Image 1: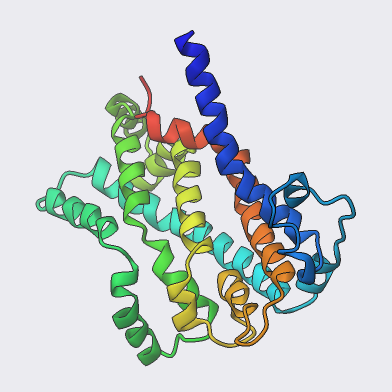
Image 2: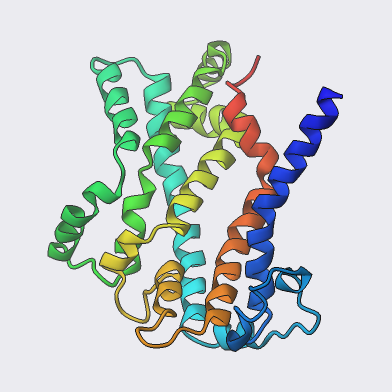
Length: 272
């Protein structure tokens, strides 16, 4: 009986979280003038639309947010590829080599992801302006490639790889780059995918940094374009909700596709 009650309670709580999302999706399929028409009183029509229309999506993707979404995908993809190369190399150095000050370097890495990025975004943007990196894709990508949390995750996974494999590789003539390329990376696919998801989400949901650095139409990212849909005197909430759905579905699909690898990366510590 207790288990049934807990299951029912969990289902009710899940439904309470799901209803606002359903409301957003439903209103993205309505004209903006009808967004709040069914809100009071609440009924099944509030959450379901019998005559859906894709007008909001067609108007959305043909406007600024269409380009911004493509920019977000491009920036996030570059961040993942370059960031994994940087973070995996740093994690390998911290896991495979013993040198004086290694603990201090690792402590700095841990401290780096405990400090909110928004706290350093403004002084960092001033530095990027001095380097003429505003309104460039390089300026949007660079802060995301050295992620302390990704380095931490990869290092912990690398530490679980048996030293005997490394010794065998060295005896077979592999250099340290060969050990990294042919032993560490193939055995760490779950950790690499988990770290890649962290880098992707960090870049995809970033708002303050793109607002400071990517200010022109060619370099604007999705969250900024979505915020720009809210005008000072008039807001088409149909477009806003459609934009929110588009910017939510893309990372949701990515996370759903790699979910099991992400769980393995967090729970696993290398070979047993």
